[in-house]
Length: 52
Image (cartoon, rainbow, N blue to C red):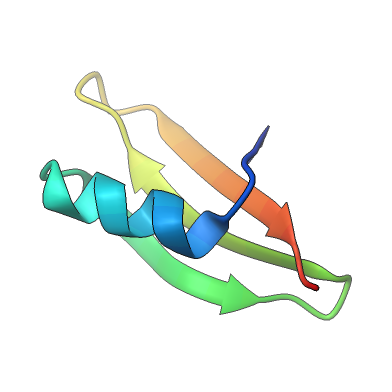
């Protein structure tokens, strides 16, 4: 899990760069917005930011 300033903006840049998205941004009940992506070696990463 990696904290970023804005998960939606980070997601948009990842899509623009051709990332393999596993889960589109979603707002979680525990107060975070997050999405999942796979890197070139197949490792799964989740990026998150607090919901304002």
